[in-house]
Image (cartoon, rainbow over all chains, first blue to last red; front, side, top):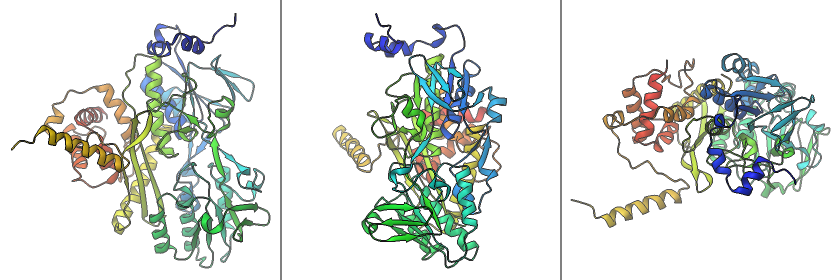
Amino acid sequence: MKKLSRRQFNLALGVGAAALATPFAARAQSKPRVVVIGGGAGGATAARYVAKNGKGTVDVTLIEESPTYTTCFFSNLYLGDVRSFDSITHSYATLASDYGISVVNGYAMEIDRGGKTIKLKDGSSVAYDRLVVAPGIDLIYDSVPGYSEEAAKIAPHAWQAGPQTQLLKEKMNTLQNGDNIVMVTPPNPYRCPPGPYERASMMAHYFKAKGMTDSTITILDPKPKFSKQGLFTAGWEQHYNGVIEWISPEVHGGIVSVDAEAGTVETDLDTFEGKLLNIIPKQTAGAIAHAAELTDDSGFCQIDSESMRSTVDENIFVIGDASVAGAMPKSGFSANSQAKVAAMHILGDLTDAKTFPAKYANTCWSMIGTDDGVKVGAQYASVEGKIASTSKFISQSDEDAATRKTTFEESLGWYEGITKDIFG
Amino acid sequence: MTIKNSTKIAIAVFSVLYCLGHGTVSVFATEKLTVENVLSADVDADYGEYLAGECMTCHTGKNTNASIPDIHGKDPGYIVSALIEYRNKTRKNETMRSITSVMGKDEIAALAAYFSSLE
């Protein structure tokens, strides 16, 4: 007779929920093992909160390929010469030293869900009792015809922060007055909805600071509208009149192809030439989520809105950009928030820790110009099986300069806070 | 003058529909709070620790940037009154107004107890 896995067994008996309610300590001898794949805003927060709130009752392992993490949030400020690259790059040292987290520098290739084991690229394996999958996004390069991983070395996407961000900055720094940038922005859903438009703002800010009055930025958008559109459009007119041109799909008719070497983007309307191309393609959940069959047809992972638990595997939680989180945008703030709900449920599963109704939050700050910050945000809860907004706000178009300055300064405080909350 | 129950129900139904129509579901906004009744509420320390996770994203403690006030170790009365003022929209900051709009007595009491206990 074929042996049933615990999940199949539970499903067959219909006792999944009852088994989950039994504290792990009652079922096993050693400390329960929590493993996190991905050391970004979601994964590192989850590792830290499980370790911190678990108070030594669980073993926590964080698997991350890169020895340091550069945040995507604030990377546009680096492009605009407002922040240094070092100031947006963080180490995992404190998570190891102060929280006892085992930081494994490796790449997770496969998850054996039945055996609850992760196989790494170097051939080693790591066992888990509960697993957090937080791989962020992968880029679907060929969603933009002519674009590829190879072409990204000439026309950077810079939508995964790190070497790509530095490459885009190096290329920006070689531009002369009169040289133009052409951006292709991604279709929904994608990481950081206001990000491409903050990036255009920071590119224009750089041109202005360098006296490059004849250089322009053209945004070719596959979407007919975008996040904080009214605020960005008004800000562009105020700070950079005529420098940024946003072209909607109704006007350009669709992206036909990109030629990175020639520096051209062909659309139905016209061929646009840029000394620098910044191509941000369509996105999907990170590879490990696909390899472990946690994704659905959308390319992202369905989760239970009360816990961030995968709907296909009760031992796995998917957080951050890889998840389908209802009304929440894909952002570092969202991932950090979801991580805390997941951490609470993981400790609820494995120890006698209490669980409470899920509460989530997000705020996206964007810098449009010097001392000009805007924000959009919301609170969320699980409502009828979906993460729904329970309260929301957005900066107003008629705010005075003092309010905008306060919002910008608040974003600096937030960055300091959230990076400490993520990395310790 | 007393309001008839049917009128109360009508107001409640209208409020829910109004909120739904604006894409949000509000459950706490109508509860009247004072510093005294919040401070006298029973506190669940575990609930406070969980709820504080949301605050910690910005109020991580020992921040060098003054734009986010350090609330660790503050007097519970101060924390409660500040949160009630944001909730009443008599204190400025859209983020804090939004956060507190979905808080009730138990949430504010638990948070004040938790943050005042920190160093």
